[in-house]
Length: 79
View 1: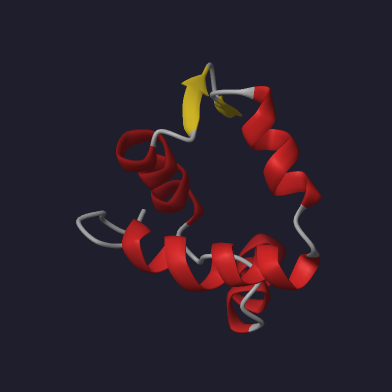
View 2: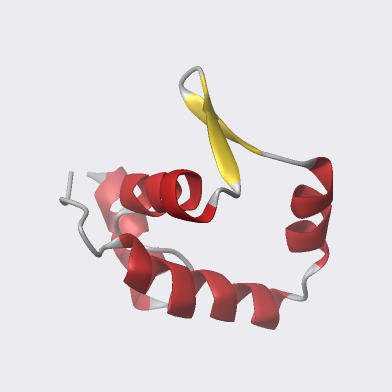
């Protein structure tokens, strides 16, 4: 139950997509930023990781909460 409450609060505050698996699949399949490794995900290049890690919080939030999640839900079933 706490997991769902946390996901809902992060979505409500615009900090994370509600459908994380859809978001990560979108980043793998369509954007090519990530690759699946075992049960997790990795950036395809260290420079991408460093770029996103260096973004100021406000800019990172606008990228993750406004742009990618909207596209991540297109054609993806909610799991």
